[in-house]
Amino acid sequence: MLGISLSLTTLCLFGLARLDPKRERANRARRPIRLLRTGLFLLCLLPGLWLAAVGDAAAFVLWTGGACVLGWLITQGVNRIGWKRWKRGS
Image 1: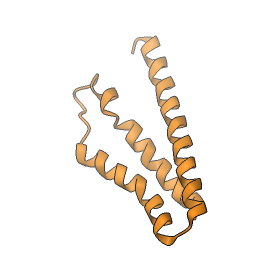
Image 2: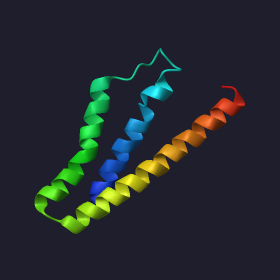
Image 3: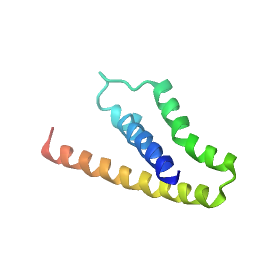
Image 4: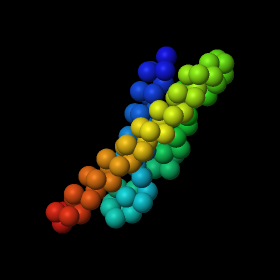
């Protein structure tokens, strides 16, 4: 169950990274939809809430740590991609 929870959270984190409003300010033609970002955020938290509601404390703590680490890695990856694009001038 923990793997499924982290997979869903990771997919949502990728979506949130893609719709980051600070990155989208440079491209005003494609404004992110606030409702979509809010929905992705809530969907990202849903596996953790489910693990807490079931009462599996160990899985909840592991999910929390995994979500933090995966979020950090996704942020670093998106930042590196953005830096390479800026460096190329595109």
